[in-house]
Amino acid sequence: MTRKERYRQTLDYFQRTMPGAGTELHYGSVFQLLVAVVLSAQCTDKRVNMVTPALFDAYPTPQAMAAASPQDLFGYIHSVSYPNNKSQHLAALSRMLVDEFQGEVPHTLEELQRLPGVGRKTANVVSAVAFDLPAMPVDTHVFRVSNRIGLTRNAKTPLQTERELVRHIAPALLSKAHHWLILHGRYTCQARKPHCDACGLHACCLHFNRKKGATA
Image 1 (cartoon, rainbow, N blue to C red):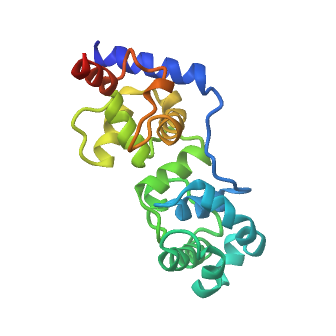
Image 2: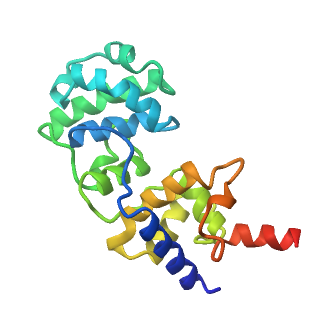
């Protein structure tokens, strides 16, 4: 199977089975999405969604959160991973939004990555989800699934994975493909024990066909 055909079959399958795929994070504004994505680093969306309702009720805007101390924020997010660092990042990024961006979340990757606690993946998520821009955020699920299926070849880093996927997926599908790969990795192509029996990508999945060949 050619690489082009593998991409076509994979994307066709996801379009049929997950046409409405999107983020599982809960938020009510672009700012709240940014906060939720920062909190989701090395943490599950389920856990983030448990802490953000109270956090957003107390601090719904950059202006409100900018007036809070990291200690104030820690009380709301202590159950997520790395709460000390994240509470400091949220306080600092809120102040920067107020001081430098008139309380608005910036649109460009460069400006987003200036915000404390915002790396390339987080900036790409905000670009894709909030601003509907073509972007491919690469988390552990996207990295693993794209490699297993064979969409990427010898990609050693998230940035290498991102570049390969961007090169082969049309801009109009790119952001949705990000959600497809995440959800497939979260619920089917899991890290320790992929549920190959529940997957419809047998014909084009490199991992499955290698495993099948090894046991034949």
